[in-house]
Length: 194
Image (cartoon, rainbow, N blue to C red; front, side, top):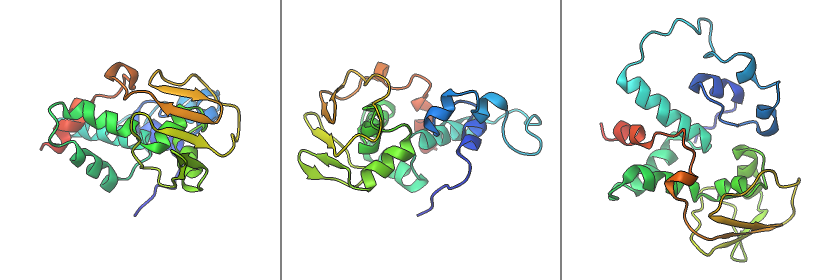
């Protein structure tokens, strides 16, 4: 299984949007995307017209990097919703239900990579049982607890989560309005439907 270990800010520059892969640094003036908002490489401004395939690929890569997933796992998650009527929304809802994403949305982590690390180090329990799999899918009514907070929770949790200190309860699954509006899930569906 491959893991990207290179510079994370380079990924934001490639996609042309901030993916918040570095936590607080992405909000500061030191963010590489603020300093150089062009694609990385020797000739960043010489890109021609992007084909339809390129548009679909860039959207898939952006979402994959936002959730910190590899290609095989991303494709497997898409396969899980292949029989749904609204595959795009069902796919995004499935991605939002991942345990590492819940840790991030609860404010217990500053980035998706730190959320994955918190989960894989065994600091999270779901309904009283220790879970160390970042891709674990939570259900409505699940109670998630963290052993100890590493820093003060940042930001406000979404409406579908009820966060109080070191506990988080899944009240409901997120609606489309609660998920990042910059994601165009129809392009991902078209990419995998080729």
